[in-house]
Length: 284
Image (cartoon, rainbow, N blue to C red):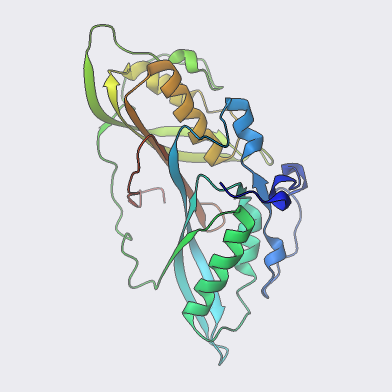
């Protein structure tokens, strides 16, 4: 794992631009990026940052990326950024948007020059090498809207009165034996820890092990409804809680959040090395 003292001592989230009146800069400025150490939230989950219990990636999609060519003509693209979960920091979302806006009136000799600069700046900010895919609007490979695979648990008839994360809602069905199944819900909602704005998502859960009670799982997903935390940390909390309470042999938790400010964030955590699928859902 990378050890970067500059990230380890990064400012706390209250000092981030999120939730504050901000000047929008339209010429390149990498100092706009604001890293937040992952360790701050992982400490509350008793996760050893030097021996993570999961693998995974945070997939960000930027729908509003633009720059100028050397003749001053605007170019536009859609960017997909893959941040490894082993990175030391996440990038605060508003700072990411402000940083991308700083490309708007900046001239570049080529698209590759844009890619190289984005990759270098964001890798430095998060403390790990990121992967970046840049696509023109005519060649975005995942532009078609799709649905998640598996069984949706949203239509289960349950009574719910808990709206803060409660791992005690999770459990396994007695006598149901071992299963391999894929479940999903569109009812995940959490709130921004700085502004309190709602963050909406669909969550995809794949596992092998003792059969998880579907009703309890749905209640647990909904229990995040008033929880304030970043997208990445919500998914890590889900992963840790399910592993602790249900002890599956393997587990993948993947949330696809709706976009805000032209960015969506899609964290995946898994016991295994998993290839990230990129279905664009109807709310994205």
